[in-house]
Image (tube, rainbow, N blue to C red; front, side):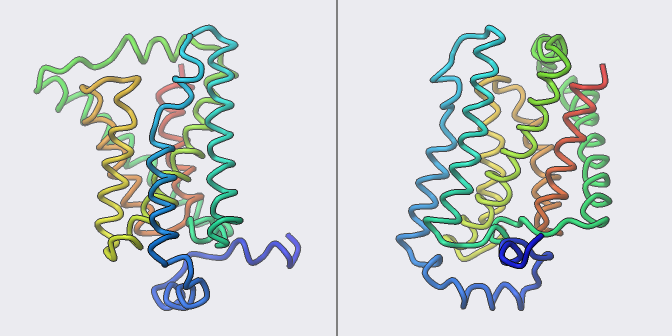
Length: 237
């Protein structure tokens, strides 16, 4: 990586480093900028891919995935060229072996939590386990499932952990409020496809991933954890 790129990535920041960054980027904390970030977050919460391509044929599903990647690119563009902030403001830092190790550990914790939901909590509440939806995804071609899992890990961690937590925390002045708001948005985003009964599952997975981000502030760890969790469900069949 060249020196001109190094300002975009750095190791996870301490609270002292956070204070220094706030001093370097004071305009990003201005109410107008933060309200702009909130507006973008709300726009990206809308189901644009399904609105634009509502059919379920294979070519349309591929186009829908392309919309998600376009939204991810738009988010990065907004941070770099509208907010004029580095990618480390989203938790994008130089990965190392700890990023992978924490990602694997986060995946193990998430899978354990989801197993508890499916095997204990959901049956106890008499809710449907969504076997049909899971079966539909598992029946898709392996190459498409691989792309789906990768897109979900990258886009959802970028939006709901890196962007939502950081910007909502700045807007509210409390990191825990930002984390809680991001968790609620992440959970509600899964209703469109999975239905209301899936809220427990989405909230459980989101809780572990949110805790991992707060602990590490390393988006790579979150992407790894998210990817491995979905891979267990949708690739190992």
